[in-house]
Image 1 (cartoon, rainbow, N blue to C red):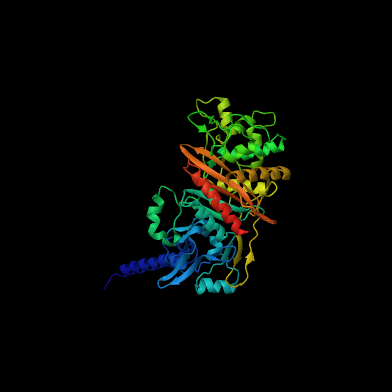
Image 2: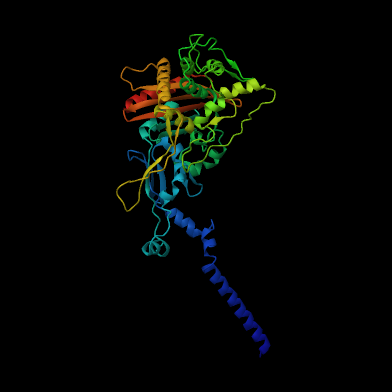
Length: 470
């Protein structure tokens, strides 16, 4: 017969083990349940994510840009317009979300607090699939298509804003990717030299370069400078030191140019001369109203990449450094999005409205779209009269480069060049009066380009497209 002491020891050990199991179960049921739920390898989370009926993404005319479809093996995300891939981003169970899919993920996935007992019962007890809301963006597929066609595969970016409201009508960044095949293409995409996940319009930070000409022109107008004054040696290149030479983007047919003509052809020499006149302020004062050091961003999207351009370059004199700053090759940078807001300010009597993209949402239990009014900050960059006269100068510039048809809408544009390290960027910036109530503002950036012929082709294609949009 077993010793009674042994039996008691076995019984005590068993009771202790049962107590430990009970305590452990109590802990995981009460205090530790959240840590279990939050583990990435929790199969319930994976199943719940897989079963989410994600809301659709629509353009301003209710065309479905992205939607969730039922396939034989489950739900899948489908993107319908290739030209919109770079702004829509992607949704993947394996790789997460990017672009608009990330910015508006809470709406699209239906992630929201439990707001009633019935809601708790459906979501926590019955574990019914989570259903997201549809969202409407300010994008216009027709303008987006025209923008991407005009880029014709070139690396760079292009943006079109509604100058009055700040709404993003089109935004493209190239190279891009196909979110429909993301899971298959991912290893190659993350190694690609062109950085297809990097949105150049929103995250790219570039030296102002020749875009500084518009800033100087605004100051010349506000300061009462005689815009008919012709500068000699206007087509000559400007030596910015350390091997950096800034010349005209397009060779003009004359040796003497006004500031407006210099803007047309992207010639920096007249602006280098203007800064030495009595009418000119310092570069820092001229730049201040345009807020390049606090740029507009698109809410909930990635912020601009930080780059540190040195204010001083070893071996360069203070005079050369000041010249670099005056011609946009100092330490001031811009994003294409912020520069588009500057163009919008010119078209909108000097007032820049913060860019926005989301215009509405439609929950599953509601048929009508609910407006999403985001508070957009506005900044006055110049007075209305300066903006009006600057528009006139830019209209003349557009007419010299792309003579408009007689019935085309009023429009203005200019070209510019900037240098970033050993890379060169070409810019085309401008506006188009769509009708009495509105105007488009646009920026096109081509990376690693010296020859302006493609920029001129992009301009022609854009103006033709805008004319057909009226």
